[in-house]
Image (cartoon, rainbow over all chains, first blue to last red; front, side, top):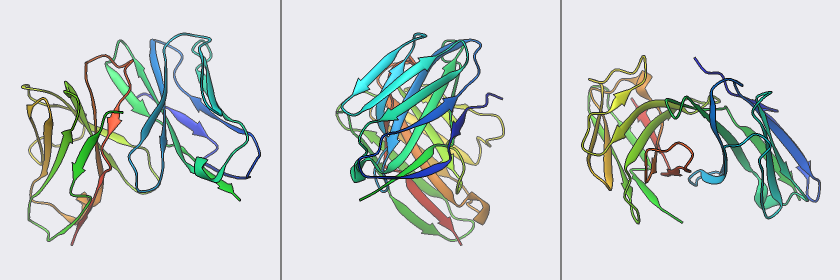
Length: 112
Length: 117
């Protein structure tokens, strides 16, 4: 069974603070790593899909990096805003898509 | 962006009844649809993967006779929880993508909270 971990489980930051969290996944047979943002009462929304070691992606104040050799991805949020409050999910697939596993998520609360 | 509509968003039913959940892709053809279940404070757990026109592939431990999945068209997949029991109470959510490639992002429905009395 593939194990995808995310840390921390939850965190609270003040508006304006920058923050980051981690997704850890098996380093063998890597195929793709996804990040999603899930706001309460809404559908999860795709942020990034990364496939290459060393990939860095950016969308506004949010960016992500990928290290497939050591099996982790970081998600960074610069200058957090209350609207960034959500659960951030990562999902890992290997073996050309034979398995697709979500992590438990990191719940971010940005306090005004 | 692409939209996936899931209904109902909340359902309460009596034990022993069956419940059908629909998931529709509104502006793209969903080649592949996924159904997940999430218990409180736990990860999204994949239940099954369905490709249009084919039988669904169920994950280990998921009873295919209890969770019937139909993906009869490129825009509609349904999950029917048959003879629901209280232990089936959970949050169910679908996702879809326009191809079989897992390096393409998923589009999610908004989820269905099922409560079985």
